[in-house]
Every structure is written in structure tokens, then in C-alpha cells.
Amino acid sequence: MSTKHPVIAITGSSGAGTTTVMSSFVNIFRRENLKAQLVEGDSFHRFNRLEMRKEMKDAEVRGDRNYSHFGPAANLFKELEDLFRSYGETGVGKARKYLHDPAEAAPYKQEPGTFTAWEDVPKGTDLLFYEGLHGAVVDGDVDVARYADLKVGVVPIINLEWIQKLHRDQRMRGYSQEAVTDTILRRMPDYVSHICSQFSRTHVNFQRVPTVDTSNPFVARYIPSPDESFLVIRFANPKGIDFPYLLSMLHDSFMSRPNTIVAPGGKMGLAMELIFTPMILQLMDRKRRALAA
Image 1 (cartoon, one colour):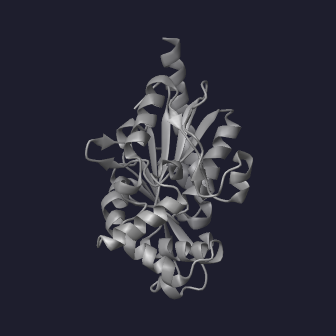
Image 2: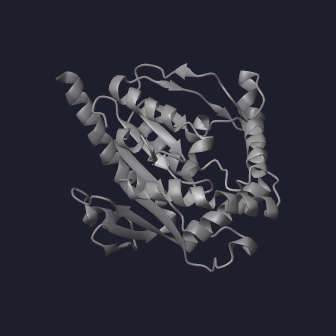
């Protein structure tokens, strides 16, 4: 963890909605006039799109049907740890971009599904903001979580997560339901070992729970809307959290445990800004005092 150069990590599995959450933080950064270095978790995959397809085929030949982007073999955990550690110590580090589609790839004159070259993070940023799969991962000697000052988990219940992934991959990426289902099954061991465990290391978890029937996610025609959901917000350490204020601002919310608020699903953006604005300002105040010392 760092005082002079804070690191914020948003972690959640594919289809969990971490990209949507990122927009709430970007609003905070803009409103508070903070310059954040944004880092996407996809940029720390080990292989580009074509290489990953080959690796998966090779793994199947070896009898490994569980090779996935969720596990350490397909990711650069050490390099991610190095970035968090280096940024926390010096405010700089090595990062790159993963180019998801033609629009992202065009300015770099590269093919979609490839990486840009590793480059130094620009100097002078106020904080580093990571969004992806492994912002709080621990694997053997690698401990990414220890270098993040604020860790946030985004965790829809599993059936809702699958519905979101099925709809996204079929409608936006053109995959068949069978292909998406195969991906879900292939990732399950790594999901249990390397994704779920991170949510015990986060400072705050946001879990969306639908209030409609999601018993069979593979036949769901629609993604449950925020208004058809509750939002369960769990604080690892409730000390210093102004629960009466949050309950007064998040109408129709209540506390289910001493460290847990349940709010209407449509209040997610508001809840994030109410909760994380003071936390981020506290990090910035610590940063200013440390730099002035």
C-alpha cells in the first residue's frame, strides 16, 4: 500500500459489470479534478487473441479442458504486481493496452485482439485506477492485493453473472450459446480458485441480486434490470462508515447486518459516488500530507 501514490483496484469476473462501475469512478475523478492513470486488466493477459486460441487448443490436446483467462497460466500476475508496487513507490511503472476491436486498434495501426508495446506510465498522475479480473489476486509468491489501497469487488450472483455474459457474448460478439456455455464450464475451476477468493480481500463488495426468476440462466430472454434487483453492499471494516447518512440518501435501503446495506439496484451509481468520494478524498489528503512532510 502507498501513501504518496494511491492504487485503486476494481475486480470482478467477465460479465460482472466492472466496466459500468468504472464510469462512476471516472465521474468522481472528473468532479474532484483528479488525474487518474487508468489500467485495464485485459492488458495483463499473457497472450493475444490468436495466441490464446492456440493455447486453449493445445491445452485440450494435453487433456486440460479448464485452461482459461481466469487462471495464472494465461495472465501476467507478476507484471501486474510489479506495476502496483512500482506505482505505489514512485508513481510510475510499466503498462500497455489491449485493443479489443477495430475502433481501438485503428489509431495504433494494429489488429484487434493485440497489445500495444509496454510503456512507462506518465509521471504526475494523482492515482492509479485498475479495472479487471485480478485486482486483488494472490497466487503463490505473487500478492497483487497487498499493493492496492482501495479494493472494490463487483459480484452479481452467479446466475445473473452468467445471464449477462450469455447476452453480451451472443449479441455483441456473435458467439453461439453452446460456445458461451463451454467457456463458462471451462473457467469454473479458475473462477473458484482465483476469482471468488479475491472478494474476501476487498474493502467493499457490491453484489447485485435480481428479484425475478433466474433459475435457469441459459434460457433467460432478458437481463434483469437494475430496478428488478437489490444491491447488497458489504464493508469489510465498517468503522468510520456513516451508515445513517447513506441510508438517508439511498431511499428504501436498509441494513441486513452491521456491515451491510441493501439498496435498490437502480441506486448503484449513486451509492458508489456517495461511498467512494470521501474514501478517495481521504487518500488524496494522505497523499498531500505525505508529500508536504
